[in-house]
Length: 134
Image (cartoon, rainbow, N blue to C red; front, side):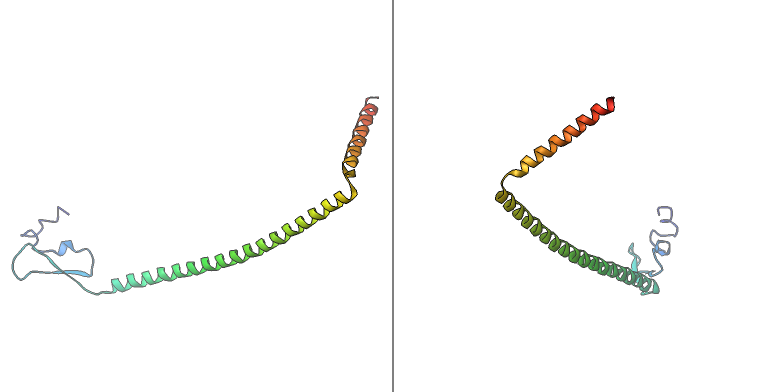
């Protein structure tokens, strides 16, 4: 930009090289001074930018709507899962209560049964190992 600053005779005499967009134009001041006056012309470029922004806003709105739909679907799924888990927990609790009542009513014979089963399994493994050596 410094190479363009002394293109004209005066320092800011011709501001045309400093235009940043087509919508910006310069006009000379009434009195010779170091000021530049800019006037922004409403051109199609701004309309294109506005249309582009509208398109982006529309896309963002669609994304937000899809996110909202997904959130609602996930919320419904989680509520249904929570109800299922509550029912399962109630069922397990009920079954444990019935099992405890059954154990109390029949006594502690289940421990004897478990010990007898373990001894029978040990005996089978022992006999099998003795027979496999022969």
